[in-house]
Amino acid sequence: MLVADIGGTRARFALVDDQGLPHLVRILAVADFAGPVEAIEAYLGDVGCAGLRAAAIALAAPIDEQLIRLTNGSWTFSRAEMQARLGISRLLLLNDFTALALSLPRLPAGELRQVGGGTTLALAPKAVLGPGTGLGVSGVVFDRGRWLALAGEGGHCSLAPADGRESAILALAWRELQHVSAERLLSGSGLPLLHRLVAEVDGRACEALTPAEIVARALANEDVQCSAVVDTFCAMLGSMAGNLALTLGARGGVYIGGGIIPRLGDLFDRSAFRARFETKGRFAAYLAAIPTYVMLSPTPALLGAAHALAESDDGP
Image (tube, rainbow, N blue to C red; front, side, top):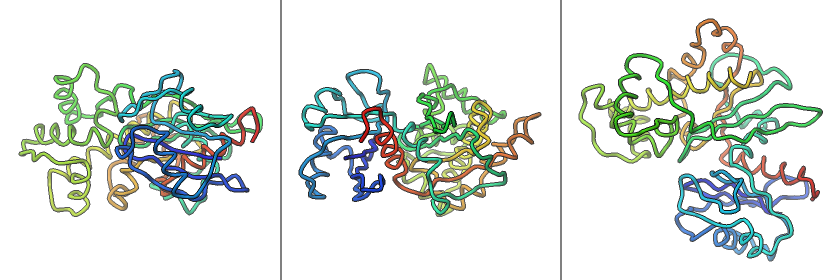
């Protein structure tokens, strides 16, 4: 049985072992393949797997339609065609952050780094958000002995400013975009735009840089402008994470996934993220009690996809 986590930039694949856990993990570039079937076939050839009987594939896209389009990628494909080409009897498609949410109750403590205070309340809802190519949002709630994942598109909610400087940044963004969602700025694809807007608000020159270059310069502490962008990014993400915690009552913790934040290391821990997470007026004490964690594993959604496959109605 195959599990996969397909984002806008990278596709992660694994087979499910006898204990129901992902193994033989490989990470491939989405741009190297015409579609998911071609990437799966390349993976199967690499690990020497002759055939499949079932697959659970997490996708950075809405998965309710027969025709699936990656939100931040070029792949467009049919659910029925994928199942036929792979020759499998069971194909489970789920949103990538639904799979990520399902991994939360099962992640080893060694794959998490706590930022700030707070204590996890057993069996309370857990929330997850993660800036990668896009911005994913989800959560899990415990009901009648099972953790149930929420499927949504919270990364596309409207982004709200928390102070005058952020209001000025958003005002500039509104000149260019009819709707400024959180993903427009708080994602890898949004970092260059945030870089340009912060430079204009702060009165600095703006050099055209890739997301990776912005992060690298901030980490090296060699570029004031890039440092200001990453600081703003972390602060705004903290405000959004606090909103999510309040919305879901996520007293089981808020988890930060995606490809960007784990790369920041101590820079993220020292940022305004946690302070902004707690800055919610009368509910500051409520949020101070909720822990926030950085997810360190590069493939947690594969664990969630394997769990979804094991619990799917048709059985293994």
